Length: 335
Image (cartoon, rainbow, N blue to C red):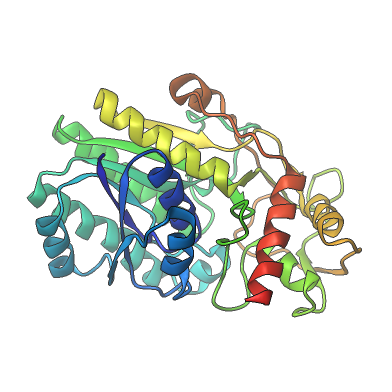
């Protein structure tokens, strides 16, 4: 049993990966400041795992806290989820995004170096492809950024690549997510943003519950079949399983990798809206709004390399994603 540190482990992707790690026989330890995670996540994880995972409350920017954490535990691998991630907000607050996403990564790496921990799984993003020239996007496609969030993720990747080149002890699993959605099949954990959501599915969910009057569709004049933006949506449980496979590869081989995690199939905003309508049993209203600065028309993964290297394949459908989200939302309302 290996002890795995999850920074941001009480958040959406971190909490699902915590479950997948425990089910794979590892011992997760969570570090989270709960700035974008519900206070009851540890209790919900306890229901799923049979015991409450160890949680350290604090920021990945807190070097003293990290030093104590690494001194307390024999950490085998770190999974780094702690970051700000809203594209639109990053356009308004680029300094905050650089401080948290890059400063937090550097503070963490310094603590790891001191503790002689040299394995890390890094949450990156399809945003590092900027305005992609090839769809679906392979990992060797040109990189760039169209917004400050994408900049921080690309800069983080480049820092890790330079660190690995400087010292062969380091090995990084760099995972470029596409669009994680859905919730755990139990309905016990899911995406729970603290304010009006910036991501599509939790926004649609609030339309489905009546908390919001309609979905704002940002742009219907993109060069896509229905004019709305196309994204590669991946079920969060598939994504969590990809993290476990990445970790296992790092531990087994000591070799780093850079991989897309997606389905390889793009879905438009209106397709997702229709699928969520099927899940909740009614047609959901929407209005067309102007395009958002920094958005790109199409982002869709080529997941071939992850399949070849890790044996990773996304198994859950768009209808599965929407049904699990609706199960989570309705169960959450009943609590």
